[in-house]
Amino acid sequence: MKFKYKGYIGKYLRIDLSTGKIQVERLNPKFAETYLGGEGFGVKILWDEVPPSVNPLSPENKIIFATGPLSGTFWPNAGRLEAVSKSPLTGIYGDSNCGGFFAPELKYAGFDYIIVEGQSEKPVYLFIHNGQAELRSAEHLWGKYTLETERLICNELNDSEVKVACIGPAGENLVRYSSIIVTPNRTLARCGLGAVMGFKKLKAIAVRGCGGVEVADSDGFRNLSLELHQKLRNNPLYPSVRRYGTPGIVTLMNTIGRFPTRNFQQGSFEDIDSLSAETLRESFFVKDISCFACPVGCDKIYEIKKGRATGLRVSSFEYETINSIGAGIGSGDLEAIIIGNDLCDNLGMDTISAGRSISFAIELFEQGILVKQDTEGIELKWGDSELMLDLLNKIAYRQGFGDLLAEGVRRAAQVIGKGADYYAMHVKGQEISAQDGRAQQSMGLTHATSTRGADHLKGFPTIDETGYPEEARRRFGEKYLPEIAQPQATKYKPFLVKDGQDFGAVIDSAITCKSGGTFVMAEIYWDEMARGIRLATGMEIDSEQLKLTGERIYNLMRCYNILHGISSKDDTLPERILKEPSPSGAAKGHVCRLEEMLPEYYKLRGWDQKNGYPARRKLEKLGLKYAADAIEKYSSKL
Ligand code: SF4
Image (cartoon, rainbow, N blue to C red; front, side):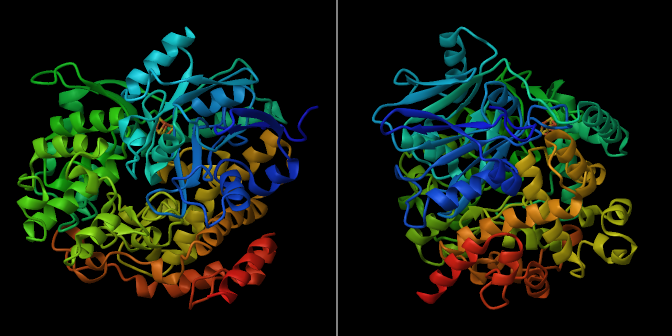
C-alpha cells in the first residue's frame, strides 16, 4: 500500500536488541503531518516511549535514527541524518545531526527511520538492505577504531558502497560524550549518543539500498531545487565557505571576541594566525569533498605532509575542533589539532566536550584545585598538545584521571568539589561550543535556552555576529534594523533566537544542513522550505503552518525536559559568562546580559515567567494538549 504522502517511504524499523526481534512498521500519515520527520519524529517517540524514570544508560532508553521528507532528494543539502535519544551526558532530551550519505541510503533501503531499543547480550551490528534488516555478530569489531570498523564491515558485506554509522572505544566505554561516526567520517557528535549504542552493545548500523524517493510534483520540485542550488552558489559568502569551510570563520570569531580561549578566560587567541583558515589550507589542504546533494561543499580533506604523522588524512575538520582542542587549551599547534581530530574520530568522541573537559582540568590545576596527586603525577599546563593527545586516549579508555573527565565537566566538578563548578563551562550538563555569549548576546541566549544543553546550532543566530543587514531585512523586515545586527544589543534578540530555534526544528526534521550558516538561511527560509515540503510531499502546508510545526517540535522538546526537572532556573550560563567581563577582543568589557532577554523570550514563546513552562493555551494551539496535561500533573506533585 502506497503511503499517503510522497517524500516519505512510509515504513520504519523497530529493533529490539534484547530479544533480537525486528519489526517493519507502517508510518502513520497523521504522525508525518504533525511532526514532519527527523527531530520531530524523535522527540515524539521519546515522549511516548521513554518516560522520565528511564536511565539514559539502560535497556529502556531508545535511540532513533531518522530521515525527513527532503532526505535523499535533490533539495540542497538533503543528506543530513538526525539521531535522537535521552542523553547520557545531560539526562534530558538529546539529539545529534550529521551530513554525509547515510540518510539518503536509509530511504533508498526502504525506511524513514529506525527505533533501536533493549540491550544485546553480545556485540552486534544491524545490517539494513533493500527492505530487510538483520542483526549480525560484532564481537570481532568490538574494541576497534571507527574507521577500521567501517572498512571491515564493507569488506564483510563485500560492498564498498555500504554506509556505516558506528561507535569506537569511547562509546563502548560509555564516555558520556562519545559520538557516532557516519560514512564518510561525518559525526553525530553531541549529547553522547555513542554511549547509548555502546550500552546497547550495538557497534554499528550498516545500510545499503537501491530504491529512490518519489516527490509529489517532480517538475515543480526540481525547478525550485535548481533555483536554490543556484542562489546558494551566487550568494556573496559562497566563495569563502566553499574555499575554507567552517574554519573560514576562525579569524572573524577571534576578532569579535567569540573564540573561547583557555577555558573561556579570554574570547580571542593571541596566536590566531597559526590557526587561521589560510594557514590550514596552505599547509594541509588536499581536496574539496561534499555531502549528498550539497552545492556548498564545505568539507575538505587535509593531510599532514611532513613530520611524525606524515600521510595522516582527516576530513570534517571543523571550526569547533580548531577551537576546542586548539585555542581552548591555549594551543596554536595546528598539526597536533589535526592529529587530535583524527584520534577523536577514531575513538568516537565529541571534540567539543572532550576539549572543554581538558581545558577545565588545566584551569583547575592552574587554580590549585587539582594537584599532581589527583592527576597521576601529570602536570597540566596550557598549550601542551602532547598532554591533550594523551588525555584524549585516557578519556576514551577511562584510564586513570581520564575516567573522571569522561563524565563531562558538570559531573567531574561535582566529584572534585572545592569550587570546581565555577570553571565547568556547560549549560544543562553539555559543554559550551566555540561561541562566547559575551561577544554576541543572541548566542548567549541560544545556549541558555537550547533544548539539548549548551548548543549554538538549535537557534543559530548569525545575523548579529557580523551584522548582515541584507539578511536581516529579508528575514525580519525594516522595523528590526539596525538593532538586530548589533552583537551587543539585546533588543529583538529574543525574537531572533526564537524564530531561529523554530526554523532550526524544521531544518532538523526536514532534514537539511545548517553548517553553511547564515548564507543558507539567507536563501532558504520559511517560504522556500514550505514550498519545498509542499512540492515534495503533496501536503497542504504554507509558511505560517510550517512555523507552527517548528514551534510544536520545539515546545515538545521543552515539555519533555520539564518532566525531567528542567525549568527557568536551568536557562542560564556559567557565572564566568554572566559576571566576568570579557578581557579581550571586540567583546572586551562585556558580559552576557541574559536578564535583559529572557523575559521577552518567555513572553514570545508563551512560557510562564516564573518557571519557563509553556502555557496550556499555547500548547493546545500547537496540538499538544497531551503535553499540557502531563505538565499540569507533574507540577501538581512538586
Ligand atoms: S554545507 Fe558542508 S556539512 Fe552541510 S551538507 Fe554541505 S558539505 Fe555537508
